[in-house]
Structures are given as structure tokens and as C-alpha cells.
Image 1 (tube, rainbow, N blue to C red):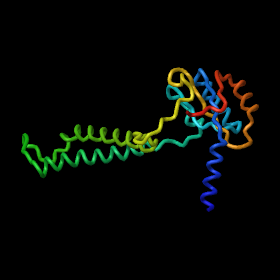
Image 2: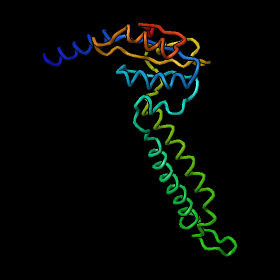
Image 3: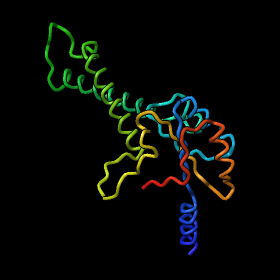
Length: 192
């Protein structure tokens, strides 16, 4: 019973949350706006930009990425598998006497081992990115969420500011937008 009530409360809270979009022409203005909105107590849920803006993840308060760990693990696995497989082939499975060299001449195996290391590290990075970002192929029906602005992939930098509670002041929000030089503001943007 309590679980149903808490789910119902969460659904009602989600219905009350509204999203406002604030568009800028300049990446520096968008970055400054994110910092200003967050320091003023507004919740900036996301920023849509046509290219990566340096410092935006820190301004949004996002934790550092863990992708380098996936790359390191993939590289280590790739290096061990690549070198191990070659050593096994040359020393155990198909030993050949080439120019009087020993079967364990690891120096000749370094180029292929290096390439396998890079390949597996890159594949691990891409797989971790897709899994962590939940970027799966859509099998079921449903449409993907729309863009908050038609020109967000061209030349607009759009902030998504959410109303989290009853303390959100539309007047204070509009005053911030005017002071920050917003190009366009849409209050109550809907995803559909």
C-alpha cells in the first residue's frame, strides 16, 4: 500500500515539473548562464549544444567520467590476449625455426600486440559509453524525445531549466533570462 502511494506521489511530482528552455547564440554566454542559474538555485537539467563546450560538465556539476577506466581495462585485456595468443602460437601450437631465433622472441610480437591493445581499448570505450548512456537500439515502439530547439544542432545553445518545487519563481526566472541576454525563452516546453 505504501509503495503504491509513494509511486503515486512520484508520478504527481513528475506531472508538476515543468521544463523551460533558454536559448543562447554564444557558447560562453550559455556557460555563464548555467553557472548563474545554478548559483541562484535553479535546476539546470541539461544543456543541448551543437558541439562540446569546454567546462560545461563542471558547470552542470557532473561527476568526472569513468570511461578512462574502461579504456584501461580494455587495453590491458587486449595487450595480454594479443601477446599471449602470439606467444602460444609461436611457442606451442606452431613452433617454427625462423632464422635461428628462439620461439619466444617477443620483440617480433610487439607490433601486433600493440594493435590488438588499441583495438580492444577502443571497443571497450565505445561499449562502456553505449552501456553507461543507455544508448540502446529501440526495439519497442515509441518516438524519441524531440529537440528543445530546431537550431540546436546548428548554432543554438539551449539550457533546460526545470521547476522542481513550488519555490520556483517565474518572475525571477524571467529576470535572470533578460539579464543574461537569452536569445529565446520558452516556458513550459513539452517533449512531444
